[in-house]
Length: 138
Image 1 (cartoon, rainbow, N blue to C red):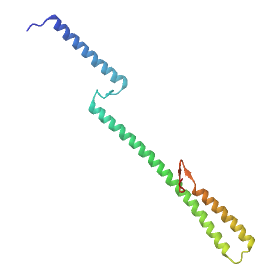
Image 2 (image 1 turned 180 degrees about the horizontal axis):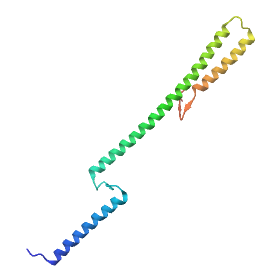
Image 3 (image 1 turned 60 degrees about the horizontal axis):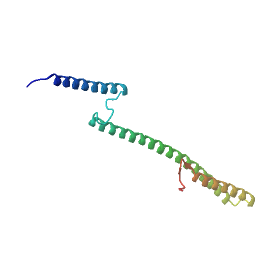
Image 4 (image 1 turned 30 degrees about the vertical axis):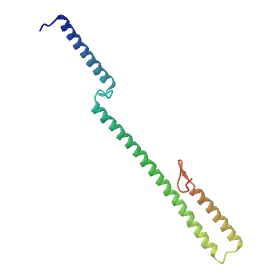
């Protein structure tokens, strides 16, 4: 078989073009600091990259959920503590008002204080954290 000058030229041009393409790819990788710039560069690595991104997003969401749950529980705990204190005070007033030694005027003052405690309990029960009610619902 005879090798012509045209065949040699085509071979050299093809090799130069292939080398320029490879150089362009390497320069692109150096500029972006990424080995995979598009899925066709390495399909297996692209799938792993996408899986890792998804896993990172899931972990970030878990962190946000944990933070919200912790805040919600801390707020609920403090609110329940306040409700407990209010109910203890209301019980003390009820025991005090049940005594026969109290007349009409002291009982009226005790009733006013119990009414204030009731209003504060309703207000505490309707507390919100963000867009959610702690106890009262919507």
